[in-house]
Length: 325
Image (tube, rainbow, N blue to C red; front, side, top):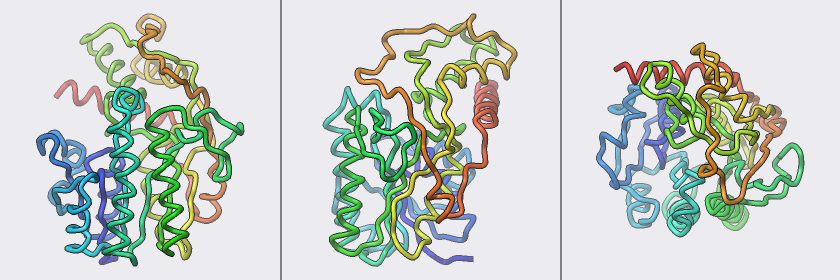
C-alpha cells in the first residue's frame, strides 16, 4: 500500500469526492482544500454520501488566496496535487464571467505557482474539459484537435490548460491535464443536465412534480461515469513522463435519448412530461462533443467501464432514494 500524500482542490465536488475515496482505497493520505464560502454541511454532502469525510484532512483554502496554497503545500509536502476546484457550471459562467475567469483560470495558475515555489517535485493534475473544443474542428476530438471555446467557463479552462503546459515546459515540472468529457454520477449537482433529468424523473415518478423543462435536447454529449474517470486522473500521475490525455467513452448520445433512458426506467412516457423551454438555451451552443480515448487506452491502460444506461439508472434510483428519505 502507498504512503503518498495527495492534495485535492475541489474535494467537495463530484470528482473530488470520488477521487478522495479512490486514493484512500490506495492507501494515500488525502488533504482536501475547503473554501469557506458556505457551511461545512452543505460542502460535505458528497463526502458524507461516500462515507469518507472523517478520513480526509480538511484545510481551509481558496484558489484565489495564494498564501493559503503556499501554507498548505509547505505543511503537507504532497506527492500529488489534483486541481479540481473551479466554477464549473457553464450557464453560470455567462452570468459571472469575471468570477469564473478568476477561480477557474487564475486559480489554476495560482496553484501552479505555489507548487513551483514550495513543492516543485510534486506531480500536478489539471482538470481540463471537453468544453474547450466548443465549436468542434474535428468530428472526433483528440489531444491534437484545435480548441474553440464557446463559453466563459471554457475560455477560463483553456487558460488553465495552457498554463499547465507552460509550467511543464518552462520549469520542467510534472504537470499534466486530463481533458475529460462529460462525466456524471449520483453526486452530480442538480444544475447539470443529467442530474436535472434524473431528479425530475424521480420527482415525477413519486408524484411530487409533473414536468421536466429543458433547452436544446438535440445536443450530443460523450457521457461517462465520474468513478471511472477519477481512476484515469490517478493513472496520469503514475507515468514516467507528464502528458495530456483525453478521457472519454468514444460514444455520443443526444440529451433526448438520455432523457428517454431515465423515463423508461420508471415506466413513464417522456412526451407526457418533457417541455422545451427557450430559457434554457445557451447563448452559444456546443452541439456535439465526442472524445477519442485511444491515447488513454494505449498509455494508461484505461477505458470507461460504465454504460450510459447503467449510469442513468443508478442516478434515478439514487434520487428516488434521497426523495423518499
